[in-house]
Amino acid sequence: MPSRFCSKSFSRTKADAPTSRPRARPFLRSREFWWQEGHTLHETAEEAIAETEQQLNCYADFYEKVLAIPVLRGRKTEKEKFAGADATYTVECMMKDHKALQGGTSHYFGDKFSRAYDVTFAGRDNRQQYPFQTSWGTTTRMIGAVIMAHGDNNGLVLPPQIAPIQIIVLPVAQHKPGVLEAAGALCERLQAAGLRVKMDDSDNSMGWKCAQYEMKGVPLRVEIGPRDIESGACVMVRRDNGEKTVVALEELEAKAKELLNAVHDGLFARAKQNLDEHTYEARSLEEAKALQTERGGFIKTMWCGELDCELAMKEKAGMSSRCIPFRQETLGETCACCGKSAKHMVIWGVAY
Ligand SMILES: [Zn+2]
Image 1 (cartoon, rainbow, N blue to C red):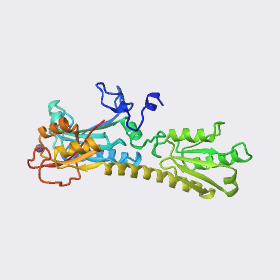
Image 2 (image 1 turned 45 degrees about the horizontal axis):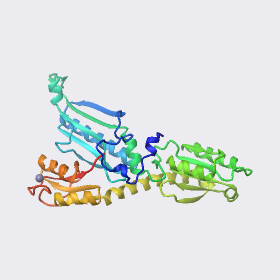
Image 3 (image 1 turned 60 degrees about the horizontal axis):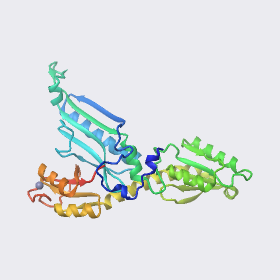
Image 4 (image 1 turned 135 degrees about the horizontal axis):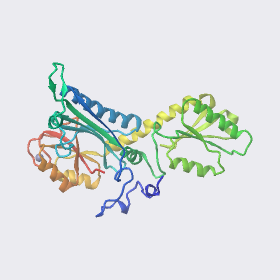
C-alpha cells in the first residue's frame, strides 16, 4: 500500500483544514481513474429509461450487497446533471467523516445525440428512426469509498465479499508439537469450503501478526493453539468489532461462513447508522448552514427547483445538491432558501 495512504488518518487533523491547493486523495482525486461504463441505444424512450434505472439499481445493489455501503438513490438537479442528459440518476454514499461521495451515475439522453449525429436504425416499419440513448458509469473511486466508509484507526476494514484474504489462520504457540499440523488442516478445510484463506506461520510474534492483518482489513482471524486442539475448538475474531467466538472444529466451515456474513451485516449496519444519524432536516438556509457547520452530514430541505437557490446554498452553506431522492418526503410547503412554493425535497452535502 502506498505510504501516501498510510499518512491519512480518519480522524480530523490539521491537514483536513481547507487550503488553497486541494490535497491529493488517493483513489478519489488523482490523474487517472479506471472507469466501468456502458452505452446503449434503444428502440423506445421507455426501454432506454428502464435501462437507465436498471443500471442505477445495479450500482446501488453492488454498493449495498457487496461493499456493505448504504446508498441514497435519486436524480441530479439540472445544475448537477451530466451535460446533455435529459436526466442523470445517482447513488450517493456517506463516508465516515460525514462527507458525500458520488458512487455511480446513469444518464438518459433521449434521442438528441442520435439526431445530432444522424445515427439511425431501420424500425419495425422499415423506416429509418432515431434510437434513444443511455450511458452509465462508475470508477475505481469505489475503492476509496470502501476505505473511507469502513476503515478505522487500526487500518482497513474490508467487506468479506471483496477481501483478497477472507480469513487469516494464526497458529498459537506454533513451536509446540501438533500445532502447525492442526492449523494447516484447519486452513485446508476452510479453503475446501470455497473461502479465501491464508495461514501465517512466520516467526513474527502473535501481537505483530494480529496487528498486521488488522491493518490489512482481513475480515476474520482464526487462532488455534494447544489448548484449543485439546478441546477440539478454535477461536474466531471479527475484524469489524473484535468479537471473539469459540468454535467447535466440527462446525468450522459453517461458523466461518456465518461470521463472514455477520461482518458484512455489521459493516452495513454501522455505515447505515452513520448515514441516518448524520442526516438532518432544515427549514431554512440558515438552519442548514448551522447544521452543516456544527455537525456535518446530509441536510434535507424542500426546494423550489430554481438555480438561484441552489447557488445560494453553495455560496452561503458550502453545500452542493447531492440528489433529489426517489423516496421523497414532505418537510413543508416552501423552499428553505427563498420561501416560494417547493417542488422537491433535496439532499445537500459537502462532497469529495
Ligand atoms: Zn427557492
